[in-house]
Length: 385
Image 1 (cartoon, rainbow, N blue to C red):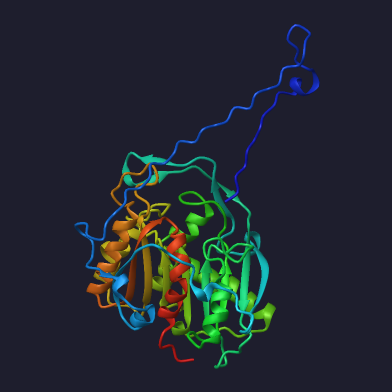
Image 2 (tube, rainbow, N blue to C red):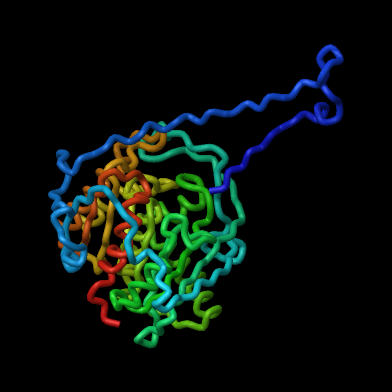
C-alpha cells in the first residue's frame, strides 16, 4: 500500500528567511502526527465456547499422516520454515515472468476507485459505511511462474495467487521455490502460478476492497477475460479449462476473494487455500442480497445451498483481527468467522481442513512459513494429471 505524505509550506517561507531579533535563523520543527494505535486483539483458545472440536497437531507424527484427512487441528509454536521453502539447486527451477495490465485497457474494472478518508457508519444501516470515493486509473503487475517440467496433459493446471507484487507476492513470497520442490517430488502436478496484483488501497472505498470483498463472480470473470488470455499469448502455454485443475489462494481479503471465485464461478475453480480469511462484513457498496458481505458464507450461503464442488484448506491465528474499524455490526471477528466456516463446512460434508494456529496474528507469518507446502499439497492431493 502506497503512503503519501504532503508537506504544505507557505511560499513566503521559501522566499524570505525567518529571523528572530536578526540572529540565527530558526529551524522549523516537524510535527510528527501520532496515529491512533489499534487495540491488540485478544488471544483466543481452541477450548473457548463456540469453537469447533479440535485435534492437537502435536499428537500427529507427520503432516503426511493427515494428508488424506479432513478436520480441525490446533497448531502450537515453535514454528519453523518448511524445508520445501528452501531453494534446492538439485531440482529443476521454474522461471518467473512479469507483465503489467492497465485499468484503462479493461472494461470490467475501468475506472478503478479510491478514497481519501475512511468511511463513517451509515446511521440508517449498521451493516455498511458511507464512503466518499473518486475514480482512478491504475496498473497491476501479473507474475507468472512456469515450471521446467511440462504438464502431463495438453493443458496446464494452474493456481491464481491474490495480492501478488513485484517480488512475487508480499503475503505468499517464495511460492515458486515451494512449487519447484513439490513438483520435483511429484507431490503436486507440474502447474503454473499466476500472481494477480490488486488494484490498490484496502477495504471499503478502495479498488482492492471492490475486487476482493465484493460477493460476486466478477473477479473470476475479470481474470478469465483479461489475465489468462495474456498469459497464454505471452508465454505460449495452454491453460486448462477444467475447474478441477484450477486453484486459487490468498491471505486476508485475498482469501475471501479466493472462496468467492470458487463459490460464484464453480465452473472455473474448485480448490481454495485461505490464510486469515476475511469471512467478515467488508463488502462495499452494500448489497441487500448479501447484507453481511463475506460473513454470509458461513451464516447463510454454505448452510442454505446445495453442496458445491469445492475443496478448501483454511487457517486462522489465535490473535487474529477483532473489530478493526469503526463498524460495530458483530460481523468483524476473524476468529469467530473462521470457526464458523469450519463448522458449516463439516455440517455440509465439504472436503476441508482447518488449522487454528496459536501465537499468530493476522496474516499468520510464522504458521504460513511452516504450513504453506502442506496446504498446497492438501488441496491438490489425488489430482489426476
